[in-house]
Image (cartoon, rainbow, N blue to C red; front, side, top):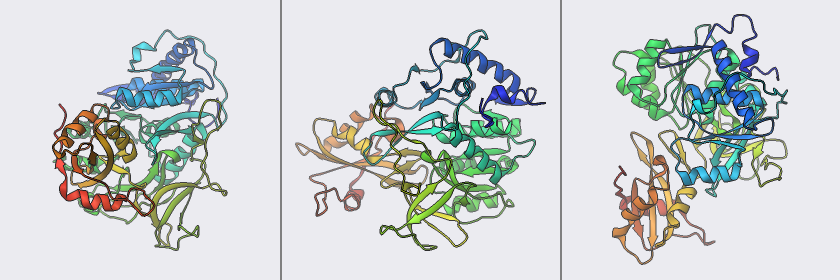
Length: 483
């Protein structure tokens, strides 16, 4: 296998590794040796079902030992994982699987369904360019796009993270988000790469996470701002202050939240990343607890970051421009049609344009001013308005829909919608949103709605989204939550 540190079967051949703890779930410790045995059995079973180099496998990726074992088994087989978020609806899952065309679907996933007695299977010697995961992220079209992340990208990301954060002998990283996200998968690959244990929490429950931190002596934690806020509200005993550091990403962290972290002696490091860059692009370096630092840190080792003006010129320090990134962690491309090459979307000099807006200061620290155009970030989950708009506009009486984010103290943002109906009937807007919600994951469902006779257009006939949001915001009414 490739000597990139991602093979669990290679890891256990190293002196002293097999006896180390690898996974901790609900107090049960699985050693690296035991984990490798599980992975061998899973790989044998999957190989017997026809999976091998170049294949793809879809998995309902929860945060548990079964998902980790399956992911590591696919790595051994040279099979690309297509993780499915457990909260997606059947229609959303179908959209992904029809595009990815996996050779095997494990939906819903059950670990016992793929285990068998230990057997033989072919272990390829993959190149760094071998696809390791295909993660779906929507663009402005609303159609989810499969970002192909290579084995080399995950290895480079793990190495860059290690150079920034370092590893201590007793480090343990807690994962409490679905492993369908690049952030969750990166925790797995970083810890396998460093031969360090992962503490698994099946879902984010503040009290359960705090108990796990105390019980398992966790030192590292990755969260989004909403999660950190909930943890602070629940932490009455100063448990979070026992962590070595907390990575905070997924959405801009409010200054008040970071100041509270410093006051609590919790070292919260802000980071900027995206799926197409295999998680982190920039990250603050460790510093003494009780202090704060502006921005989202500098580019990680091997990654170049620049900001570009609409003219194509480089932005000056402090000047806002489009954030572009380059390096070994960047995706190989987006999936295209059957038999077609990947769509790379890179500049001539190899930069990926994130679509996000930000500025670099004279020290090279990144300040993110706006996430991708029109993107709504609610509780750390990305919601792309075009995708929700298409679902709403599929209803017979909806002529046009506009979806946007409204600031919310708890979630960062919540989803809101404006509808143009035929025939006009403001009283039906709430019922229509409720009807459409069955086809949307919970975090994508509009929580507020307004009905209008028409949406404002630009001179070129396109939706004037900024004006629409200004006009709709005062008219929004709540949408009842589905049971």
